[in-house]
Image (cartoon, rainbow, N blue to C red; front, side, top):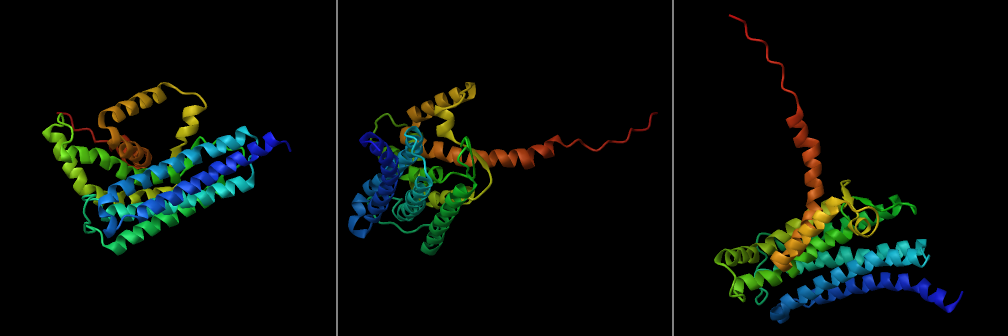
Length: 293
């Protein structure tokens, strides 16, 4: 094997390990949040969230690099799942626990709010278990020749992105609350205060929901593959333009909107098509003809 071939062989593995490195870094920064580091809690949680998104980039690219270098192997597939367990299983769950405790104000330590610490721990543990089950099922059910255009159940990177989006959204929320921008209207300021008070209560609910969706059989599209390969119709263009518009208007708040839309749109659509729509399509019972005069 030539030197160039050895470089191509090790590159996908390095990218997969980069995924695990980012997951461990996310846990490390989230762990820095505590009574002695209360003032830096916002920055630590934000950094942890960014590392989770960086792990998503590595996870999206390592498989493509392996196929491009013709270096796909069973070892790489198993290593990818092990790294995903750290970055998209343990790291988001731990980030949720820390965010729920310090969400009301990043400058002061707050109470746990609506959720008892044990309830939050159970939600975090459930998320980790569901992520592991999701990864194991993917390894067993996915064939080498699978096109990967669709997933059965919410992908673990998307679930992790939904959880990690809340610390990122708090950047814009803090601007609205503090009124840093003079052009912020009163309505936006009140919305910011509402989001600041409810974010820590909402994230555990979102974490529990995406954990259940990971082990569901609901069909999800592979956004990365459909975006960069295959045919892209008018619907893809409309979605892309709409996404760009949302990002431009609400900035950091667009991150949880986009990820929560991806996570919950498919189950809502499934419920609509399976339960609600058939009820409307049922033909009413024949009404007997009224007697003629």
